[in-house]
Length: 111
Picture 1 (cartoon, one colour):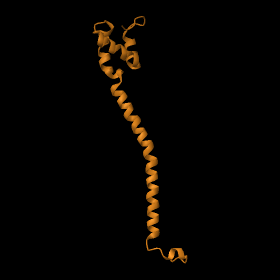
Picture 2 (cartoon, rainbow, N blue to C red):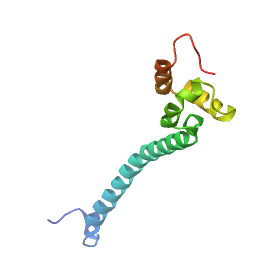
Picture 3 (cartoon, rainbow, N blue to C red):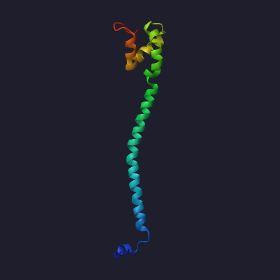
């Protein structure tokens, strides 16, 4: 297909194809940038959540450890540090608190 427009007469062969390719690349780069920002934000949130879960004082002692020590905790047979950690965990963990409530009579409370 030939163009009769004199502005196109001096364009070397392939110029139009190069322009189309450049526009496609620019569009792809904009699309990647639009996707990358929210993805990076989500990744940051996930990393912060993981860091919080790792260093969260509630996770200082696992739920399994807490459940295993319910009887000792109830009977006040734990040292004060472990008792404090377990008490803190019970205050922050609704699942362990529910299980402990089933073990300990309603009128009692943990140390």
